[in-house]
Image 1 (cartoon, helix red, strand yellow):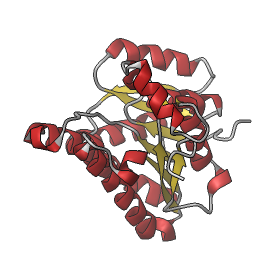
Image 2: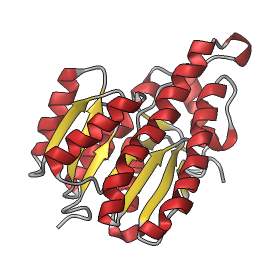
Image 3: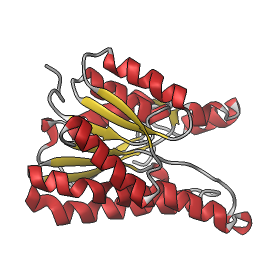
Image 4: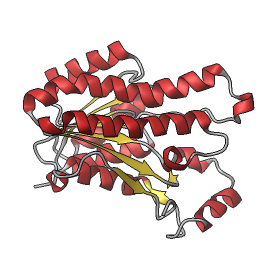
Length: 248
């Protein structure tokens, strides 16, 4: 029996990086996993097969979380296929970095739409089934950048800060319905995004972290397992930093 046996989770943006690790850890812990991907159909199909190997039900959906109607349709499809959504993990995100003086309106809007509006879209779509079930765990992936800001990432920081305010508001609104809302704030995590960094830049980042290393995407996934499981039934409205002590 895994920590999530019998639960159904929906993970957005799961074809790579942190989202992929969350989906895999959830399957290992016995959850049925519905997930979304946007770009690569092949990656989506490969992940579906990988998850199913754990003996759980898994299905990928090609869906753009930043589009309100698509989020609504997605939730209806997942409910038809799985019967319930017990855990929602809003992970979909992009970066379009640049100094504010050079940042275009398109760069600002795209990041806010994908990172922040998608959280509103999917959470709103999940409310009805969760309220009907009188239970649910919503987990939003924010970032340490949302807590402290970062030069060259005004759009990303604003979107990730917005997620924190949204998470806390949802916790206050839905606590009486036994629906929990928490955020996970990863620090410097090794993913496809960080692989392109200059090794010197990476070493500089790591030297500023008390644990003296970058995190793994599994470190973030493990925090999500905890927040999705019954181990955290009295925890809501919190931001759990998975950052090696970076923002201590």
